[in-house]
Amino acid sequence: MSKSLSAWILGVTLLPLSVFASPTPDNVQAAIDWAQQQPSASQAQTWQTAAPLVIAHRGASGYAPEHTLAAYALAALQGADYIEPDLVMTRDGQLVARHDNELGLTTDVAQRPEFADRKRTQSVDGRSLEGWFSEDFTLAELKTLRAIERIPQQRPGNTRFNGQFEIPTLQEIIDLVKRLEALQQRSLGLYPETKHPTHFQHLDLSMEKPLLAVLERNGYDSADAPVFIQSFEVDNLKTLSKLTPIRLVQLLWIEGQPYDQQVLGSDLGYQQMITPEGLKNIASYAAGIGPEKGMIIPRDAAGNLTAPTSLVRDAHAAGLKVHPYTFRAENAFLPTSLRSGDVPSNRGDIDAELRAFLATGIDGLFIDQPDIAVRLRQQR
Image (tube, rainbow, N blue to C red; front, side, top):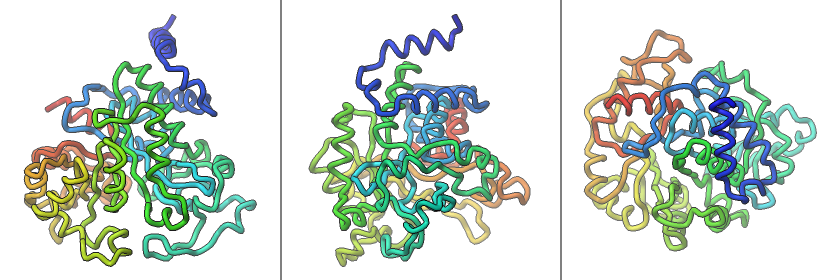
């Protein structure tokens, strides 16, 4: 018997019965099987959840279309500590993983004539958007769609997987995590983001209680559980802080204000939130912050890294963990001096960028190629 087969059998014997109650257990195993066949799954792995945490941004989205079971499984096999599903709501109140509620960029819905009449224009978080929206589809309808690569210009290689993978539900993602935990004999964390919570609340599709119901049903119900819940909005995190001991993370953008604060007529903006006083306020309801990485090390007019700000130090003084986003290996996303040639999709010197940020004392990071951060962490 092969070592991999015996490990799989051992993993199965350790699984709770709830895993086999999954409505689509074959999807979970198919994702693991696919991920194990990918070359990047054989990278050196570290399975200690030591700082800095490696958070797989939308899964291993640098290698496979984002927010698919395949991308999440590959991230786990690369040694990521946490996988990050962005969550939106369906018309029938189900939580599914998509970066946005607009589906045109990440699924083949535009090629589906049966859904042509679902295309419309609406306001989402104060912006007018045209497309197909998750809240106009039932879960059964969404399950007929297939994922596509969101940024094909930067990741042309990922387009070879277009049409292969379904949109996963939160429960399917949890089933995948439980199975991978048994297979790898280690903890694998969840880092869900509530997308557009005010928008969905106005549609009578509030996300907070359904999210907590799924998490608690699967044993994620304490501050020690391997889970963080993140959001760019403030009020939904404050609501969650009253409903659950699960750790919460306030996401931050470089300008403007959270959409819920805009709706409320508040003057609270992101720049105010990163002052020492603002960070103390965040610490009253959250365990950490997720800043855009330029808030930690800005870039100059030429696009090169400058000196770090005081944000990491100030956040730590307030008792907050710091998990910046998003690190990506392609030239298109790197500082100018770290790019390799002029082709946007080519890889540059992401190692140098990561080392600069790790030196600031961050507690974790979101990355599209988790294997790179895992390798660097091993070398430290």
